[in-house]
Image (cartoon, rainbow, N blue to C red; front, top):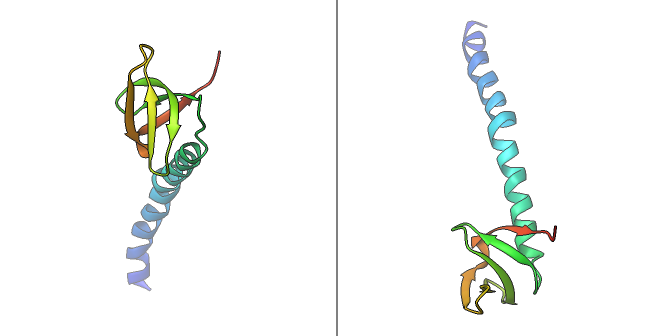
Length: 87
């Protein structure tokens, strides 16, 4: 019974880490994957590098973004951080 008492704080610590760190991170990753899979032509997006652009074309794993001056850049779909909404 003494060994169970010694393991209880460690088990409790893992449970706390799960609910405070791991679970919220998994939810956030799920939201990001969903957002990246729902990208559409014409969406205004921001990349993880801070580039703001308009989605010009979408491939299975890449996205072509158009800058304001007409320059077109190709990014991996996973490089899209957020979709900006029209305000």
